[in-house]
Image 1 (cartoon, one colour):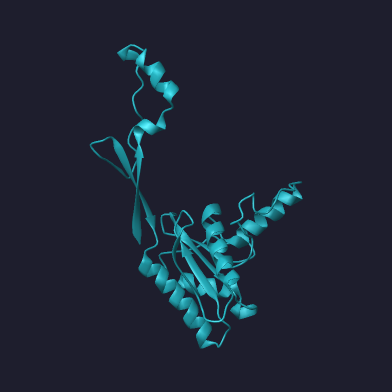
Image 2 (cartoon, one colour; image 1 turned 60 degrees about the vertical axis):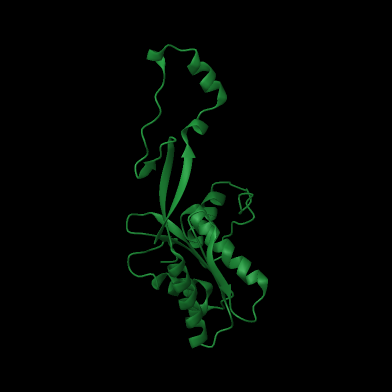
Length: 203
């Protein structure tokens, strides 16, 4: 598990109109900055360093290797596997020989959608079904072309319920060798400290 560190300048948190108003107020009226966020570090320049856990490159590679080994062991056609961080950016991804580029893109979208919704793609599909039952008629991708409800996307969560990233698999067949079955193998390679958030019909 790695830790991503991002910087957020306090001065950027306030619009220009705020500073104009503050400059005209007596000192006793001045608004103090909010307290430092938990789990953050502060530099001399007033910058808050926000720590965020994510899957490491070694963990992402282990996931891909486990998925590919399972496919090869059962003489399955090539699949693609993509592992992303909590922002949906790729940590590692690969496609077995002989598969079209669209299979890799599909795997990426599944992993991306899982982290954005913080649930597996099976849960996202069930969410759409509930919304449509209540009259929702909007697009299934919420106008984000990277969203998908295709099976085979897992969100990866640690014991403290931190979203560490997502796993997506594309190119599987059916039954024991569906995309869902492969992504399950990938998650298992990370150990019992990690889990996912499936829909009711995909435990």
